[in-house]
Image (cartoon, rainbow, N blue to C red):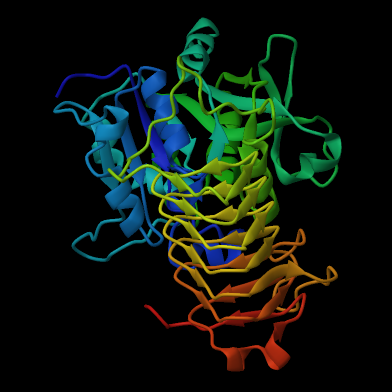
Length: 424
């Protein structure tokens, strides 16, 4: 095995419970994004664009789609004999099978994988953020400061600071204090959950904290390194970065792609976003169709109107249908004369003729007001919405629903229909 200067460990096991029915059957990093990509494509592309050719992807929750998407890493040029991409699920030990419990425990369980490359540095990444970042610049900063740990940080609005790990750093960017989700933050320099560790420091910290339950970087490993007087530095990042952890931020990040001058540009030649692409026919937009300010995926057929929306591959939009301010994921079929307003419709759904989604007043969702908010109508994977029904805002649908599921043909704002076990 050739020694590697830096390897990346990409944490992609998250369930993403705040994405509700979108992650009922798929891990958050495998959720579609931007009509063509999956969320995990962004950190993986960052790795290859930063010259990192050895990436361990740690999966756990609903890993099948993630595994088949990553495969042997060909789209990211990570199909290599030495290094490349490795999918690392929790494996059964002889005495007991252990799920990953906490981000640091997941990394600890893959100690042998890391040791096999004997790296100088280990980059820890999260699989569920949308951003472009040159990790090589961060590594240079780490080396210049002769740091033990470097944490990527970005300034956040003070009122949001209590949601993050917060750093207080001196003028040389050395971290003097670190607080995980403080109630009364004294700084707005937030951890992005991206770390570079000098390998001996990471190894020692993981062994020292190995018996800690739910061992986590923010809660345990970083404070431990701090207590050991390790040299810790804050690398400040000022580019676009979006945690698409809620339906609202996920919808927003997709909508920002179709701005006249998008804040996050998918089309830069020097910083490509790579993904696994299926070989499918080009899109078809009929003579009577009308498309405005939208992304339309390959293999889609548009016969109606699509305005300000992100449409995945292989989507069918029928005649007389209007889709506005919405995200429609791949292989979904929308019938004729349907109205879709500010909705997220996941992969493989079917919406019957004359249905109306996203109407009425905004009312808090009764099942989970925190998740199903932002005025969105959300339809989970492989769901069926029958002809002619009306669906309100802050609603959730999952499964093959029938007309009988809709009192008076309506799912009122704030209501949900979850038919578990339909396709499982």
